[in-house]
Image (cartoon, rainbow, N blue to C red; front, side, top):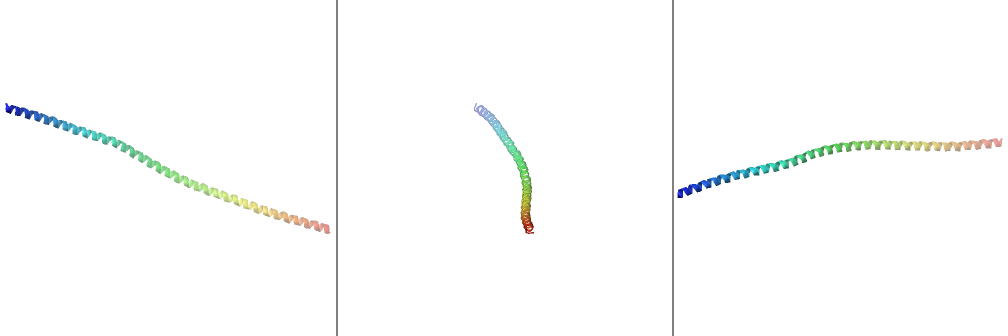
Length: 123
């Protein structure tokens, strides 16, 4: 009877060990599945962040090229406007020069007319 109780105990103990081992394996598998699910979830976020970063880098490069092009175009416009301004100043200088010559010629004309009148009256 005692030996049957020991055998029965050993059988129950072996069954419990098997059940415990099975539960341990299930727990390890569940933990692995959870870990894989968490890593996959994080990888999706990381992949999305990486794609966003690549897109931002491309946009930044395009923006830099556009800004450089705009700066060159602006410099060309400034050069053109400075040339136009210089040409206007030269036109103003020529106009002043012509006005001075015209005034001098009118003075000479007035002097000649006066001299002619004086010589006509004296003759």
